[in-house]
Image (tube, rainbow, N blue to C red; front, side):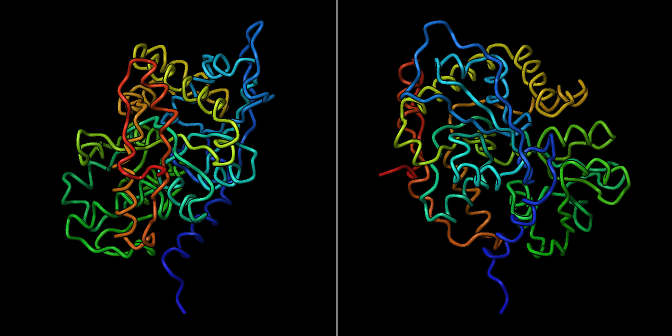
Length: 370
């Protein structure tokens, strides 16, 4: 009997979870992670929150997780956590971060929409909540300008996405369908050849000519541009107000129930970090890149960093309606069975922090805890 789409997707995620660490792939997939305890100093006289010795924060080593990168580098999280130590674990895999959240080795983390959706639905809504937003945008269709000069020229070409069923793969399959072209989602074969390629090796695949373009997140897109590719389409242009979720903040339901004050402290730090990033974009870009260098061993060059940074919008809003749309795209592509996302959001603490800071509250698009 053939496997169901959800089973095939789980297999794809399981295979992807065995990939080696990809130090700079947005929404990338691999099983390894890196522990990193911040050097931020605890202020004299600071008190522990909820009696906790530490809060374990997970994020990926890429620019779409700029809030976590900058918050770590500039000490925003440690400041709000007081004498409770902020400890960091660096991931490059949605599935492995979900596993860490489930096991308790991470309490709260930054993650892309597809892993959040998959983690929530696979646990029947029992393992996580999305408690905040972090970033929008930063995804582009970049192509070889000698082979592809217009959107219609994409038909018949080989286009890379990071991984079967990941956020960019779903977005590209949906765009292909909207052009009236046919592609088998599982095999990637059809009017366009969808080549699932790790972000780590996509630039080499482009240079070798084995792919004609890629629908990828930053900084991979800008790395390809540095190799001579051209941006054919920015995914943000396909969304209302040019906004769509690329990074969420998730927390384990157990930790949220037992330590709401700690979660609130991290969310307050996130809001403060985002405000600082948006007020100081150049300094924030440098701070994010410095932390990337610490986490991955190598900072991004300016010709990659600058355009990548410009295409990412930092936001507290989780853009919940767009997450639901992304889930529907995965359903339409046959990569996800009917997703039950009711209760995936709990924005109570975020809205408390936002209102206290004089900001507008944000919506859960009807997918919040009842």
